[in-house]
Image 1 (cartoon, rainbow, N blue to C red):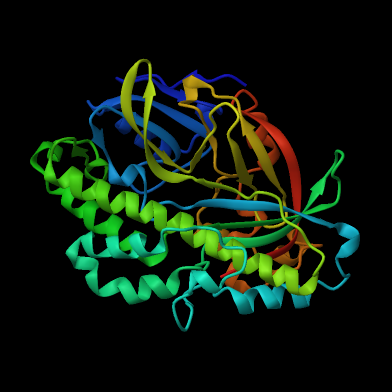
Image 2 (image 1 turned 90 degrees about the vertical axis):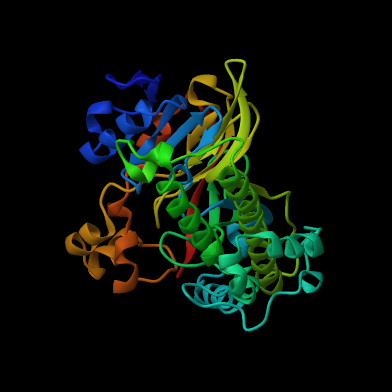
Length: 399
């Protein structure tokens, strides 16, 4: 579908879904964003829903300014995926041992590694520059200095909430049945701590005093506050990418232990909560994608559904109207609290039939019924991405 414009905004707010179907809180947020004097434009993805400050599923291009709430507290959160040489026939009927082996190798929820992962000892981990990366920790906001040990031990860990690790099967096409590995995670506690500190600083700046929503407070180019935020932001985004790289290598080694013959293609990795310096309309802008991936022409990305509903590997079409972006997933249609009130563990068991995963009260808020229909989301952005592969989960690990 093509976009429609949300009426009544100063800057264009282009929407890739039914604008009348957007929840009122989210629509109000989008209008507030479109009213900011620094905003060039906003692209609203079909998985849009209410978020803190800025709407989840929004892409905001700003001139000489950036709002930390438009990135969110999980800086650099995103997806990584890799196709393997395995096929469905290689997998055993009982996938429980494989799920337990993944959970043993990669800490989930609030857990972390007993000792920091030594990247030199992780087979398949090709990321370099570790010494320089950790040395830069000392340049971050001094208020997080005491968190370095925790940050090191959390590198290569999943976290909780909607973060997950999956084993998937490709559906349809020449590679029907091919096994993929996929994971969703970000910058863990250190990203959250940095984000919250900078958001608090932004809210106290004089130029943000009269904003329609103080959570949309911005930093301005050329100020020490902006310089400090961007320094910490770039580091946290790199931490998130390295976190996923470590996990993907650990996951690959678990699979290699079970299937020694396995081979791996080049992995795909993409943030969906981040800032990038880009040029649109001949103007250099700071683009924040909060719950959105970059979908420049030829860019590969991952758009997951919910537990048990399938996911998509996509290639971007480079649509400038959307700031070369696409959705980051299905998007929630109800809050976690509402999901817990609406669904039972029996519902969870029914909706995740055929998937080896947790089926207890602790993950009811992640039930497929709490999310939008991923097939509808994909149909609404066919001018933003093309589907490369459709995947369905057979193993799902959550915190």
